[in-house]
Image (cartoon, rainbow, N blue to C red; front, side, top):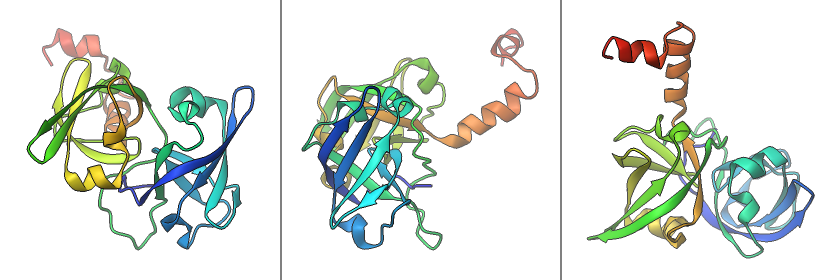
Length: 209
């Protein structure tokens, strides 16, 4: 489990592409204080397993399903990535529950500065938007952020200077693809209250819910 509080911005040192998968070599510094083979590391919000560890790099295998669901397939040597180790049992829970299992991707639609902050608007399809609520949490490329506005096919977050300086979020440009993970609580609530009870969206609409 992760919190979405990025520990450092790392760099892709190498990529070995397979037919549908790849092996990433990721370079960093802070995360190597106590990382071990088999540990989980969130790379742009995607939970990867450290298969080999060297002085300041680790390699991880990325399977085809992860390539389809995330933006890892777009990375190149030298690409900057957000890095976070799995949360220790005695750590502070500064963000929200992030599993590192990406729900899908969205696209940067707008960046707009307002005072010391920058509004970032992301477009996404309904399979993701339906789980996003105003003042709720969302992980964008592994960054725990608060949703400020929700639209029919998009949502906005406001980026403070600290988040801008410690993550890759403001290196993104309009049209860039980003990894999205919705708050897992909403998905559990949907399954427990609707699917398991036999309720459907049509039933709820019929009775004005």
